[in-house]
Image (cartoon, rainbow, N blue to C red; front, top):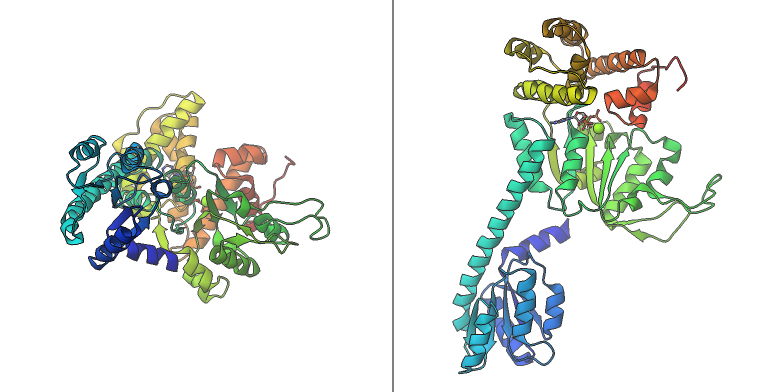
Length: 465
Ligand SMILES: Nc1ncnc2c1ncn2[C@@H]1O[C@H](COP(=O)(O)OP(=O)(O)OP(=O)(O)O)[C@@H](O)[C@H]1O
Ligand SMILES: [Mg+2]
């Protein structure tokens, strides 16, 4: 992260770009401006400056008008076509009124007559910088508001923890920092990871999700890093790994704590060196991706227990987003239930009437060990059941409420969650006659996750798929 902090330090200073074909002028100006605490970049040729200037450039441009290759007026017009709010100060010939008029017509912020003392220009620059700062600030604010709108439609919930989470997502999404999302099962970690990707500048590139718990240990290395033809017995062809697939986009490492230690070491190298070496190759491939990781385990505990590398943790947790369990944001329960039920009713073409406040209060008392996934499942089953709302709730929560209240109070949360998961999967398998594909769809989990959970919970399907 050294590079990042260095840029951040440089960003602190206001940035001035100087474009002038006259070397003596470039030197004199840049020296003076650097002494005045500006960060300065100089260009002899305006065409090169044009190549480097991005629409969100946060500084001010100071350019000569008379230049051999690209003149200052044309240069100004090109810059302003990309971003009409970048302040440009033109340096015109002394007493050249037509040129000064032309300069202002081109949309330049200001002009100064040559020759001038560098001291004279500092005040103009500071004013221009302040104007630019306001424009950028406003733009960011508008973007954040737009982001919030799209976040509200994807991440349901208006409770305080949810609002804070959405603010953090809007704030962190456009940056490149690695994000570590933590939260219990079903709290929405994957949903949040996708939201971050979709609000980032990488939104038009791929979002590659890898569930570290679901890759078999034997093939994990080649799945992640790829392999060359003949790298090991059975490697008939070349394989591009998930990391390379994510180039340009976002790599989402789900359940990162399940990554075997040997792979953690390799992953650390990829993150530090930004390159990947396929199994059986020694030619590194440059990789550029944004990393998002998710965990439902406490990674510092995993570090203490020595099944997670501390150095890797420090690489991935630059920014941590902790999603609160549903029982800590009960204000969201009614809204979530209502929206999920409404959507399900539409999908299954069933009628749905909003649940009464008494029943809403009842679902609020439930502990929701399976969090939003459990609630979504419940809302969908509610829509599919027949009978009065009261009857349906009775049937629904006969199982559900037991989880929260019947288990011994001192049963560890992980065990309660395990018990809950086991029952949901068994029930679903029963309902679908052991058809794993239908279970995947109903529970909205990928096949690998389901297989992995079934393996962990010792659930066998009675019938073949
Ligand atoms: N705030 C929310 N608004 C709308 N849907 C949500 C919200 N939170 C979670 N969900 C939905 O709940 C289900 C579970 O979410 P997700 O898969 O993201 O959870 P997870 O934290 O990754 O769970 P696990 O640890 O089991 O993998 C998904 O169908 C998701 O769309
Ligand atoms: Mg998940």
